[in-house]
Length: 577
Image 1: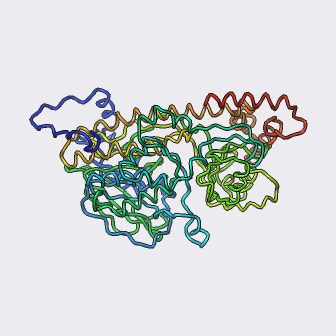
Image 2 (image 1 turned 90 degrees about the horizontal axis):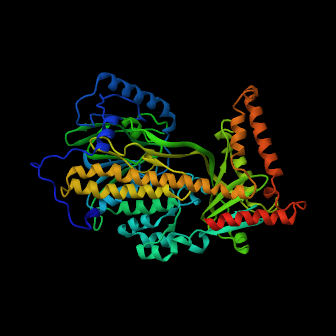
Image 3 (image 1 turned 90 degrees about the vertical axis):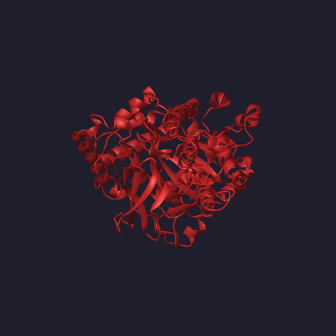
């Protein structure tokens, strides 16, 4: 059963003949099984040596992978800066520990707590400081609050948190259901509303209520991280008998994994302290572990060092994500009876979506598309530009009395990718969370899939470490999780495509901006200077929005019949959701 909830699986006797590995696993192992000589790849890309028990590969394969590791190290050094914050210092890392987890985000923290629940100690290595709990610290001159990303917790994820005993705490922290059960489509948040969808209808159906005692929830990711870190700090006593040690950034310093070497008993993990510039800051330290888990995000250096590739679609769309606070917005929306989780806005000045992480406290994240290379990340993340787009999305009068505080803005690229393998051939190093898969946000599958990765892996690692399962059970992690993640990837892409039907019903072809952007890359447009291309793109986008009926919904010249036809088409699409 899972994690000891069912019958225990006895270890397979050593005298029993070893069954051949399934064909698909043998083929996958042949693709990535490489013995790598020990190399120094710099502070931001770990090197992995001898993780497979297989004989050494030809020297050409070794040198090729070594060159790839060295190249990736130099290209990522600039992104290794550590955020300063926490007043407490780290304790020295232990000499031995059953599991080392690279990355202390939501997935890494959840994995450590799940292991502790089963009595397994772990070391979590995170270069960032502990999360900040609210925006008040930034107002007082402290570190900016963490940028919220995920927020929807699916039923299966809530079952995992139920197992950890925090399901009720999550529901208490979450906003009331009435504030987040709707998606709304509007000219602006304070302007004309085109329609809405109650996405919670399916979740409350009888078949789902009969299938699980847990219900989905809506909690901003930083609050979930705080909850998990609180559990981790109390581990070491029942019911969480395993101990968790966290190495994180403090006052501009931190630790990172710079190497790992396969040995007979597991993996020797090399840690290096570093300063705020991402440079080595002191002597390296080696921790002997049975297993290493990479939960180090979409740009996982562990995955790259293993040579594991991702398959799927890249650059489906580019967005700028803006975290902001506006406490005066909720009273206005309450008067209009417009609570909702997602607010899709279409007008002549902006097209985007505003995500309510906590309406009552005014915590929002806005997502606006942009079109590189004609629009750069630096341009779209400028505070002035972000505030302009937010005010255009909210609508109302110019001097509306709304105080908008922009905390952070990140440019990001939407991909739909799944790793070819979720572990090394020896099943000593595992990928978990975004290091193994990246989805469009449509449906909120990313974080939830990462929690399922952690749950699937935790009970298997614990069973092997405690001797109740044969180590070959770990070979099931890749086929089980990869198939599930491929399904979720395809579903999230389908959700993204279906979401485009709404603007199409309103007369806004969603691919026109991308076509314009691609056209500017071609001859003779390539003869146009870069700044002129940017101006041309913005002019065409503005013209397109101004000529479209829906983005001028309140224009006096727009016939009533045309308005009714557009709304009828859109509501027909929403009914199919």
